Every structure is written in C-alpha cells, then in structure tokens.
Amino acid sequence: MTTFGDGIDWDKEAQRAAAHDAIGAPAGCEMLDIIMSEIGQRQNLRAVDCGCNIGQFFPMFEKAGLDYVGLDQAAQALQIARRRWPKARFMRTYLWSDWLGVLAAEAASGGVSTVDGTDEAARERVRFDVAICCAVLQHNKHEEKERILPRIADAVKVGGLFAIQESTVTNETATQLRHDQWIALVERYGFQLVKTWHKNELGHEDGYLFRRVA
Image 1 (cartoon, rainbow, N blue to C red):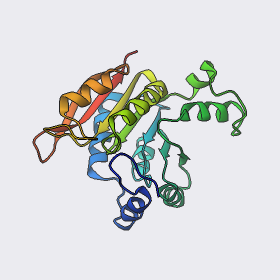
Image 2: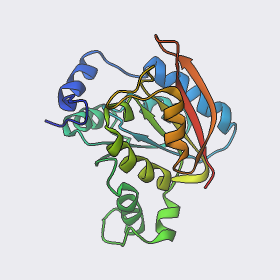
Image 3: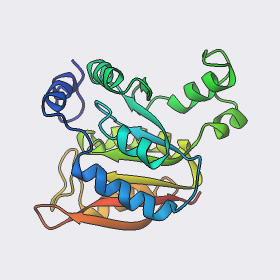
Image 4: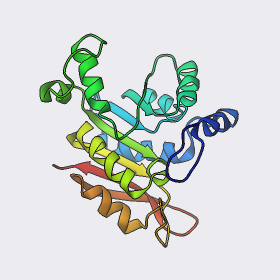
C-alpha cells in the first residue's frame, strides 16, 4: 500500500480511476488548453506529468505533439498506465527523489543508468519545457511539498512552464492551502505566476500556471 500525508491508498485509487475510465479528465483538458495557449507553435517540446496515476493525460499530450514522461510512486497505477499506453514513458519514483538524475543517466548511457546523473550537461539535455501536477501536491504535507518542489524546479528549463491544479481552501489544512499560499509556495522555487483559472466549489481559483524564471 502506498500512502502520503492524507492517508489515501494510491494503489486502490488507481483501481478506482481505471474502473471509471478517467481518461482526459476535464481539469486536465482545461490545463492543457492553458499550457498550449502559452506555448503557441513551438515544436519538439518535452512534458513531465508529476503524479501521473494511470496516465490519463498522456493521450492529450501526445495529440498536442509533446514528448511525455509520467512519474508516479504507485506500482499498480503504473502497471495500468503501461498496459493502456505502451508507447508512453512511465517511471516509478517518489517525486522528492532525484528522478531527473535517473533520466539524465539513462539518456547519456543509452537507456542504462550507469552514467553520473549529477552531471549538469546531462541534466540540461533532459530538462522539460512543461511540468504538471494535477491533484498531487494537495495530498502531501507541507514538508513533503518542500521536498518535491525543488525537484520539479530543477527539472524545468528556464522559461519553461509549471501548471498545477490543486485543492484550494479558505482555511489551510495539513495538506491543502489557500490561493495565496499556493502561489507563494511555488514562487519560492524560482517560478513566477503567469495566470490562474477555474473556480472550485468554494469560489477559489485552483488552477495555477507558472513560468520558471531562475
């Protein structure tokens, strides 16, 4: 069983998502539209889905022409994802691990993790133009968020985009934040807010698009 700060069993959640055939959920569709409006006609871009679950957003990124990598820690979720989307790249990892280093090492050594993933030139070659977290950070305690966000920041190119859609509340909880808190937290790691979108049932905008500036 894989759980985080709010105690959800993510292997069971993967089964639930697969049973409901949660492909291209509305939140993800709107998020992709926001991202593509910023990207324009640029080609050969790379996207990383941080907390991809069963890979339901892969078809949208594939259709948009982005090279996709999905990351998740739940083995059962990735098993479903790989069965559904055999062409996609999925990687089992904790988001606070050095997954960029693993990707850099594999790329530099032809798919085998034998090259030093800390080499900056190797890391730069595999950095991403787009990163997303859709209903992921909201399940992690604050100290876990502070371990995850530096890894994502390191994986996004300067000028690249980071989109999140996370539970936004009136009063902070152990894992959920207010609108201003989400913005302040992400901007601490070298991002700058570009725009927000989508009002939740509490009347708070819960979609956020950032650009990596440093």
